Image (tube, rainbow over all chains, first blue to last red; front, top):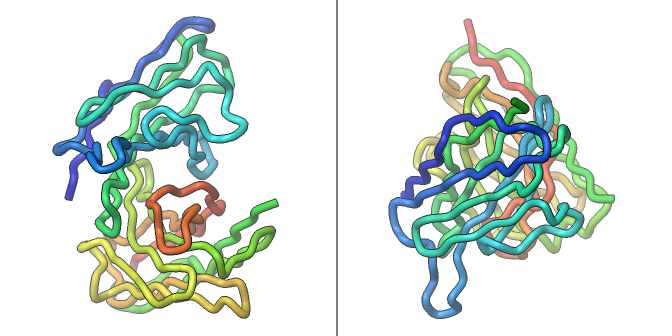
Length: 115
Length: 121
């Protein structure tokens, strides 16, 4: 299985400041035949199920604010919250879906808090 | 609107069985693949299984292969997870989640609220 490693485990950011979360996969999730990275990001607020934020590494799901952006390719990816809002306090997970059917795997999560 | 509502969780003794259900509404259930994902208390997400839109294809995580069975009844708009030989480490909130594809893409675009399974004597 592809192992997903996130860093940091947690971070505290002031309101309005930038938050950056990293995700590294144990093998490339870039499929050469279509040049797509099979990498998604989810947000899980306390007491709620996860919510899909970004897929194909950089495509925002409908309704997701544009302060959320995804970047990266191959094995290294980043989720950036450009201006942290109070409602962004959550745990964020990356997930690979490379060439399914194959086990989907998630990163360990990054907890984002307000400084 | 898309809704997924899990049920069937509870406290079960080690070694026993349990069946979870996920009732879907607000979309054409028979057109989408659906997954089960779990989250142990205070831990991260673990994908368990997926079933294609018509139930003909399934795929499991190694951790549950042979013990858990995913199935669906499209006439009832319901997804199931039959769990056997439960262990303490199966204690978790179990979520069902829709895949945007009919076989599967591997994305989870809508999630239920989850049902808690506690395996304890």
